[in-house]
Length: 201
Image (cartoon, rainbow, N blue to C red; front, side, top):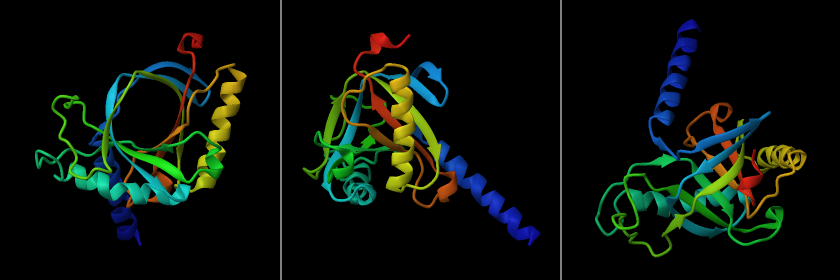
């Protein structure tokens, strides 16, 4: 039993180290209020696909064409490093709980810009430039269920209401870990764009 416990601990350490070894989307921390962080993200590129389906299934649907792109199915036949997080957001403006269309995105590594980023071979994969963005973020650990997401989204919205901050656009669900990471170790975030960054003091 002791050896099994040690082996399990070492496996979890290995998984955690592997998950933190990849490049993550950098940001400037502007403010922290309780569990909410106000962040500024610099312009960056996303490789994204649009999929249709349930909230909990969209990530799986979008993953394959994006993974093929970074695996070499692009104009340069170049392998591109995996990054974090994988992002998911509603692709049309509507109540997210009734939403069935989603953008699923990989963050393009910072070594690339619009001039040198490889063009996807699959037309469903689009390279989209993202402007500077100020967001409110909440972190949570655990599984990828819609219920877990909605619980933390509500905590984020309640906190923003208390700070008198207005939101713009649909929230981004950010997942940092691969599916083989035990559910209780998975790092997740919800990123909510803010309308007026000058209101952040």
